[in-house]
Length: 227
Image (cartoon, rainbow, N blue to C red; front, side):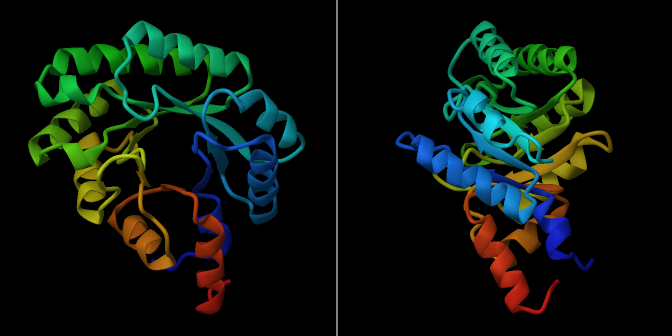
């Protein structure tokens, strides 16, 4: 498939999740997202209200990362954090599932958690993305989590936080796409720093890309003659 720069931009969550990000950094992030037509800005919950204000009048969504980057908070805490971000104006959220419980193969816990987080999103009428952190998982565990998603139906399953030992791979994207079913999309994130890497994720089945290299990807596409 051939993609245009506009199509790819509309699949990019323009990301700044750094602990030391300042108001100036968020203003730049929002200005860039507006200029390039990115799908959203992906940020931690604290700056949500500020970024929503900075993006007023644009089509760019304000997204929030919940239980980020470890996922090691209780279900109640994750729901409360999501609801707080929603109250501040977030229009979608990505939450990190409890990787330890997935490693224990406590799939009932993972499903209960996913149910609660998807329900919070549905009450607000917004998008929920579930982060697996695939670098820590076996193929069996990725498949199990994707099958749970096929039942619970979050909007997206997502490969990585970008803070783990490795990021997205086309193989993991394809695996998640295969087992999450037709109602759940796949977001690739973590280590996507070039058009070549982004294209490989799209070809594997991703329909959203989380990256802090969105501008570089746009420039590389244009340099390759892609408009």
